[in-house]
Amino acid sequence: MALTKLERRIRIKNRIRKNISGTAARPRLSVFRSNKEIEAQLIDDTNAVTLVAVSSRSKDVKATGTKIDIAKEVGKALAEKATKAGIETCSFDRNGFLYHGRVKSLAEGAREGGLKF
Image (cartoon, rainbow, N blue to C red; front, side):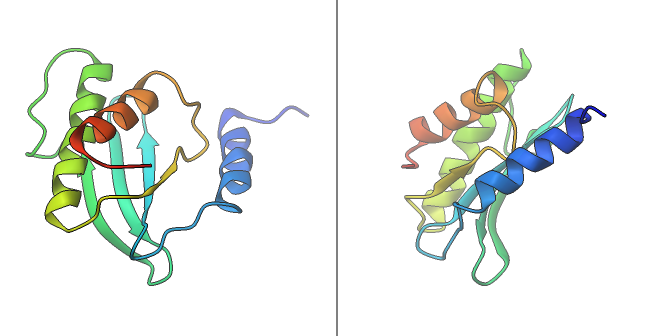
């Protein structure tokens, strides 16, 4: 029987997470994309703590336009919050989603904001 979209994404996610882990010095930038919204957070896996989180529903994000434009603004807002928290490098975790469209736009926005990964 064929895999559902969710089962396929979870398999890819587990394959990625075997190699990527976040620390306090270099947290993991995890991206979640739903049909309407996009969320990103910097996670310290050693202490199991979310350091910084931003969503397209956050008050920090004042973007209108396409979902790709909003994702870029979310990336910039995350980078701004991260620099205030003293974080400048991270590991990118696309969370099983393909690296194109909104996920790619969020990553480019975070890079423009000053995060390195």
